[in-house]
Amino acid sequence: MTKKITFVLSLLIIASLLLVSCKAAAEEPVVEEPAAEEVVEETPVMKFCQVTDMGGIDDKSFNATAWKGMEAAEADFGVEIKYLESQQQSDYEVNLNAFVEEGCDLIVSVGYLLADATSAVATANPDMKFSIIDNGNMGLTNVRGNYSDIQEATFLVGYLAAGMTTTGKVGTYVGILFPSTQAFMDGYAMGVAYYNQVHGTAVEVLGWDMETQEGLEVGNFESLDDGRAMGETLLDEGADIIMPVAGPVGAGTLAVMQERGTGLLIGVDDDWSVKYPDQADFILASAMKKINVFVYDTIEKVINGEFAGGEDYALTLENDGVGLVYGTAWVDQIPAELMAEIEALIPQIIDGSIAVMPTR
Image (cartoon, rainbow, N blue to C red; front, side, top):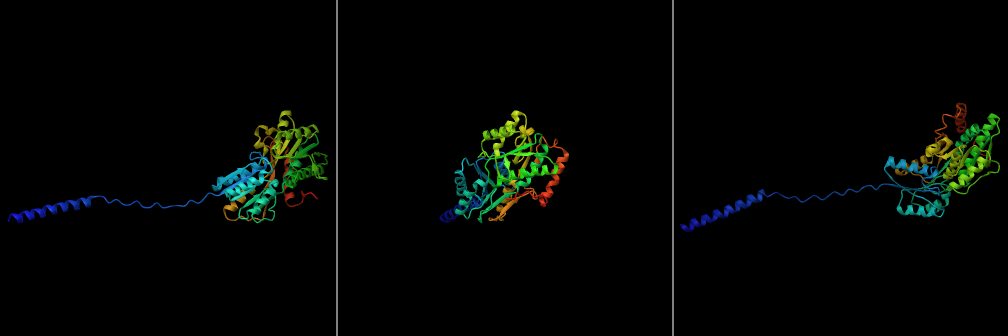
């Protein structure tokens, strides 16, 4: 009997232990294995790259206007933008190849002077996309070219200069003479000639001869000292309004005008009265060449998968790619009659009633 009781007690103890063990196991929280993190692949940001000519990115003219198009694209599309400045001509191809190595989605060459380098690099890299300002596409299917009928705009500023001169002489000079800079000079001279025809005047253009297609040339787009010297020469010869076609070189001429307290400058590419606000009293107007529009348009086409190499994009009066803007300090001082005459010229140039292309 005692053995039986002992056996029963043993069973009860074992059962109790098992019950406690099971209860503890039931109360122990279940620890779940962490779920594997979902890997989300980020879409790479597109990169757009600009190679300047020797004027540099902050030339307050040609290169800066192109960069403005890059900055607008960055703001609107969230793309990455970069630039490389060329210090000498041998840098052009080096800089273009550097951006090829970076895998830029588009490489923008700023200016006619980069044509040979762009052709060489684009030919060697047919899968890369390029665009070039002031030059055609060179027959390459991965290059989008650009040209500007800037002579339409400089015709207007030439007419303005002829109407505003008090000496009967206006001047101009060029940094380096090639087709796209020559167009500035031609339009300017034609605008003066047309004013003379309409008003029976004899305003003279110093620095450019339409017949010989020759004029004053400083040989670069960088030297402010050359701009000073050219400005002094033209002012001393009697020109009271000068249009430098030389990027930042023109700032040297502007400095001379400010020092002497005489003379008016016509800017090119961008609104110089905005670029040089402290000298706005000496800036009559600017011939706008809106290459930022071309740059922005090309970037947008690359983003949308619509880039088409082997084509050229034209900037004209008709599409507002070129034009005239009056200086901020002069817009209220120019006679209303003269401004009305200039406004009336625009539709006539667009429809061809007034021919602004010189006969070669």
